[in-house]
Image 1 (spheres, rainbow, N blue to C red):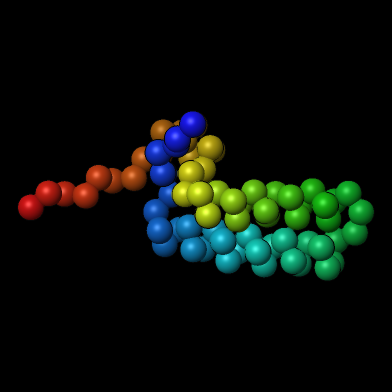
Image 2 (image 1 turned 180 degrees about the vertical axis):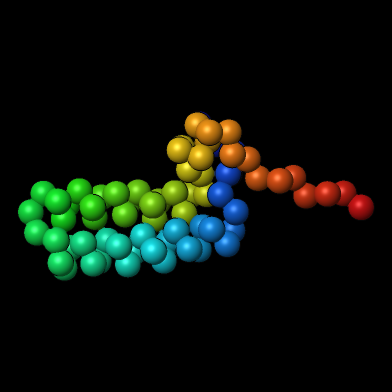
Length: 70
């Protein structure tokens, strides 16, 4: 199934960077099930950045602006 991208390029870069940092920090500093849960959540943010589609944004109706024709 193909999804329409709803995350702009600049936000995708930020999601990837912050998601990787969050994953690494949670693995290093949080122990037990909490660390695993936070690492998985951060990995989900990385995946949404790589794919360009965020299910939570889609549920609230977020769409990218279409480029204007000249």
